[in-house]
Length: 112
Length: 111
Image (cartoon, rainbow over all chains, first blue to last red):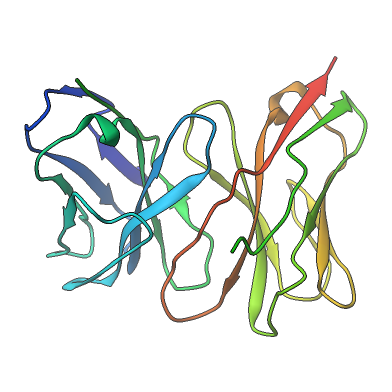
């Protein structure tokens, strides 16, 4: 049972490039979320989804897009990378709104 | 506004109980208290949650005051592997899962 899988683990982008961070879960969870964590800070919510076809913005959505075409996958797209998006990105899933969340191991993104 | 307040850091001797406090004075009746921890730079790990009764599992115990305005996470016999940042979170059940993390408490277990 893999849980929540994020790819890639590390990525370096140039300013202005676009890319997609992948997140997949094999637990049939309805709820999925993306967070970013900057050095010395807690996690901030970027986008979340309560089921396939349904997404909504979190605390810091600007510069990011998401879609949820399947229950398993919740990719995060950076449209035009900026140095301010240098961060560690975590994906999480849970089976219901109040249940405990399972987190992936993170994607460490550097934008130069 | 932050829903919870935690001390930024704590030390605990190895083998002793670690008691991590959390204030959540504005908690509402349908909101749960969750605890997660983050070891080094790994993804956060769920520990325990509760509504108003004390809870215990294989990892920890959660003590919630009667007025629900504060809680304490107890690691009964702390080990070096328990060194981590511990997050106390208040969220409602049902609706959208929007777990919001603050900066937590950095617990250092000392040999």
